[in-house]
Image (cartoon, rainbow, N blue to C red; front, top):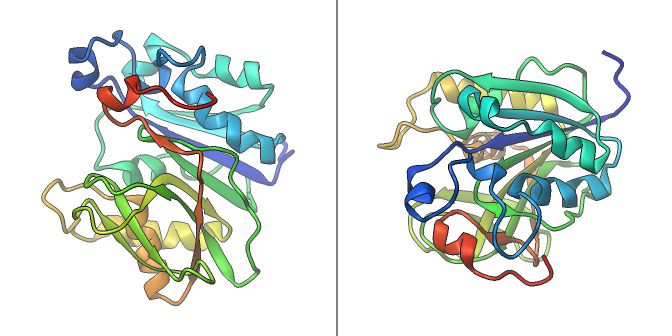
Length: 247
């Protein structure tokens, strides 16, 4: 495939959840739902901010095969005038976002940077992308203190991350948006595969993108935290129904 872009956006898309069906939402995967405060699906809202910075980006969708038979995400790409790159149909439930992400490998091109968006918890605003040459990537955050989010600890002046704590309690107001920018893609792949070969270390048996970031930080790589003031939660039916400003 002709490269055409140095940027890839990988959308990890949550499936058709029971709690949303029980909450009165239509029988669609979460990423295809249209909340009452907008005319756009969560997928389109998630992509919109990203592509304002990278209008020539390629996009890869990772979703359950059964969901892709129900609704196609490629219409969103046409609406946003983005090139379709790759679609990964999962035929089983995998061990968390990281294993779903690595199902997209090998990537179709040698990209200079990869955005990873876990499209089931937050909707980002336009994310800043400038980082120093000594930084490996960015973990985007927003101001929240709920217990079920990954919390990011970082130096307030430099923004350098020194720890990520996944679903361990309300120990920080800096919640991860589930959005990451990776600049050293080959090194990230090596670290991700190493994580997946080790025990998960949590009762759920799931692996998260934050596990890879923590490993890379332990290896001496630097990640920066960026706060997105306009990001908000949509991870539960109650959060989905809450009015959102300017959306």
